[in-house]
Length: 218
Image (cartoon, rainbow, N blue to C red; front, side, top):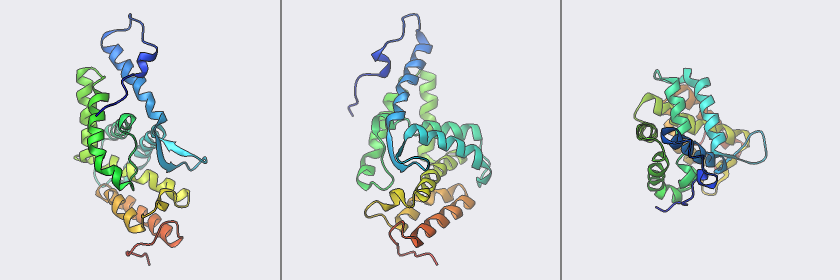
């Protein structure tokens, strides 16, 4: 998969005196500044615009710290924060794939794996392995921390859509059943958060913020 060749650090290269491991780390940190430019579909609650990926990642990290007590399994909060901060970095190259974009989801895995190879490859070898393992862990949901991190990634836009009176729930073709199905991973990590999430979806359906599904709330 082709990506733009120029790294941000190439626009104004670091002095030759900054070399070795530190140089690689700073090049990576400069490159991930691009995350601030990747727009998501979710609306902000506090302003009339869409959020970007960096804002989303910050919000997820704070949600982990605040909501960790609701995890069904004991989790390492620090590692879970690392997971949510790292997981969307690949969208610098792969772009955001909205949850309700069925066509985009068909190529999402291929695009994001290629992006992970390129982006984490900028780091020193040991950190490349470490951050790639974090990303793979999140994608596979193979640990309690990854399952809770994934739940946060589903709860955060759900809350924003609720505050916006629908938001991306109003995407053509999306019904309340679609939302329930694609948010169900919340229940793999936290029964109380999934109960709360279903309440928001059900009430949004009652209010007409999302097209009704067959599984109508009482």
